[in-house]
Structures are given as structure tokens and as C-alpha cells.
Length: 111
Length: 131
Image (cartoon, rainbow over all chains, first blue to last red; front, side):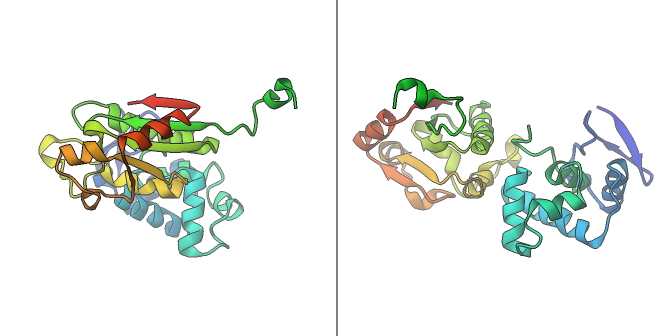
């Protein structure tokens, strides 16, 4: 699988650019992935990225977008737990893009 | 309504799907692959139930540590099922008893069924998929 150099560290990614070993994740990697996805990371983006990392730590999977939206609504309020808000932050799919930035695998059920 | 009307274009048809889990969590790919199929099926808004029987009950064991066998511990993922609106989890009483387990040993809330109750539940299904 391809290796990329991120802030002086060699990391392995899969053919779609997702981090292979999530224990290697750090903020530099998040910033690199965001750049690849053409996403400008703001505090609102970080909120979702950090939420995903917590979700993964708890359940060992990356959630499907429908499940992510519902879970965000529960934790951060309905003004954030909706498709419009999340797609504005991550136009090419909140689950897909935010997971990549968070260093998680591609969501299960992401068809 | 005639049979043709009921068939229409297939959208909005809800079938009863049962996923039957009979194997221990590690050593084969069945448990993990079965779980992934269930998570994907959840996107289609069907009536899904999961059954754990025979060594399949071990999939729901609490306090698992897989470090020694160097595989991912996906037991926590069963807790995510609720968020996917999969809330019908059934466990076979006889399989629990045979392994000295009780509901308290399991990582999620389940309904424990007798052999007869399980047979009735299976008979109600449109589709039963066994892993």
C-alpha cells in the first residue's frame, strides 16, 4: 500500500487515501488529509472529527452518515445534527471525508 | 388488492430479515462479516433481528481482550446496533446454559428465548441468513 510523508513521518494509507494504522493519527495527519480533501479545517470541523474519534473508540466502527447525523444531533444539538450543516462542512460526504481526516477507516455501509 | 398491486416496483416493501449467528467471534470471519452485513442492511429500513445461538453467544461476551491473538475486538460494535435502529437481539437460552453464561455476561441487552419461542420467531421470517 502507498506510503506518504506527513510532517517528516512516513505513514501508510490505503488506495483511497485512508490511514491504515489509526494509532499513528495526529493533528498533522488530520491537516494533511483535510488538504487532500480540499477542506479548510475550522473549529466546527474539528468538533465533528473529534466526535468521530470518540465514536470509534467507543464502538470500534466508523458510523454510516445517517447514524453519524443522528448521534451528532443527540450530543451537539439539532442545529448540528442535520444533513445541511454537515454537508456544508464536508461537501463530499461527512462520513467519508470526516472519517478520513479523523484517521478512521471508510464507514461500514458507505455504498 | 391483487397480487400485482402488492408487488408494485418493490420500493417500500419491508421484509422480516433474521441474521443467525452460530459461530465463535474469532478464528473464522463469519461473526465480523455477519455483523458488517447487518450494519449495511440497516440502511434499507427492513425489519431486522439478530439471533445468537450455539457458539455465537460468545460474540456478545463482555470483557473480551483479543490482544493475545492479534485481531480486532469488535465486541463493542454490537453496542452501536441501537444507533442503527437494530434493537431486536435474541439469544438462545439453551446455548447460554450449556456454556455457563447468563444475560449478565453479555455486552448488550437481549431477549432470551426458549427453543420453542425461537422456532416460532424463525417461522415468522421472510428471510433467514445464517453466519
